[in-house]
Length: 331
Ligand SMILES: Cc1cc2nc3c(=O)[nH]c(=O)nc-3n(C[C@H](O)[C@H](O)[C@H](O)COP(=O)(O)O)c2cc1C
Image 1: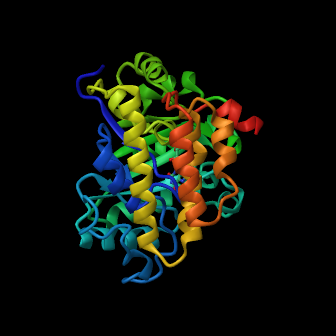
Image 2: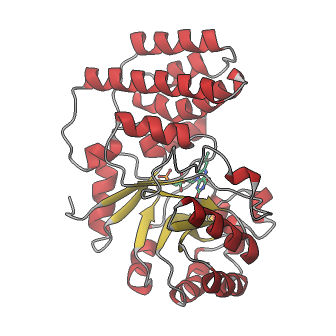
Image 3: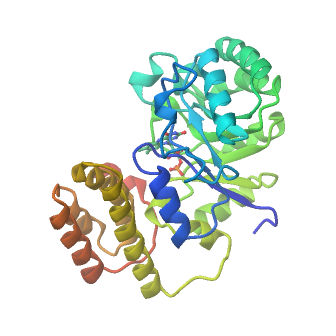
């Protein structure tokens, strides 16, 4: 393991909100840095949607959390940076990786990647007017991975604090394979600290990427950690509990997270919906993922949800194998 290894958790809209991050850190170790799921519509100086638990400094660690924005509007990004600075944050992140068509067709998220000149114009304004650092999360392109090369010229013209690259293109969504050869190729070209993201599902996946990208010491985990919340601590070789202990810890985590989500809002269905999103990843760490999923996927009632969770933890075995994308796609 690299001595100065840093691990972050990628943001997941609908899953890794403040409640998740807080509960996660009480049970698990190994993540150095978190990002909020993206914010949009920062239309005013005192935007209502920033006056939330999501980035409230009383509920978040401003040192280890970076708020993220999805925007192609320099004025909006500046407004976001200013309001985050007022809350005590010293870095924001811009999402130019979101692959969804409704986002991309408006030249937002990965839809901005084929237009380096637009990005250049945005950065020119933003960097003159912000007091926080700006980090970037992107993909290799939207239509084609060669789009990354003119983008790197733009990135290199500005003091971006870090460049996180999800090694896919937008059109792939979350499918297909990551292009590790291309990631390796861009390592010497990028001036900013470079962070690898994509398909780190197990410790052995991580070891492969770590070896392949020798000079990279910062990695962002995603679906792998949602499937196996111990992944970061396993990668960092932090002493691990026995497998049956792990099952108990995950059980307690899931119960506490649901309780916290219930307290969060008036609609238990919403809390269940968010838990199900997480379960769609967690199932892969049990001995019978499809059976576990069948127990949980149709539930809409809090009592039935709780019963299903108890049933799962009493009847299935935690293996902690991590995410398996190919099997998920067959579903
Ligand atoms: C349901 C879902 C929601 C996501 N939400 C965000 C988001 O709000 N911001 C972002 O930058 N990435 C988002 N991502 C991308 C992840 O942070 C991560 O980059 C991606 O899953 C690739 O990493 P992985 O292969 O390790 O999972 C999302 C991904 C999924 C599947």
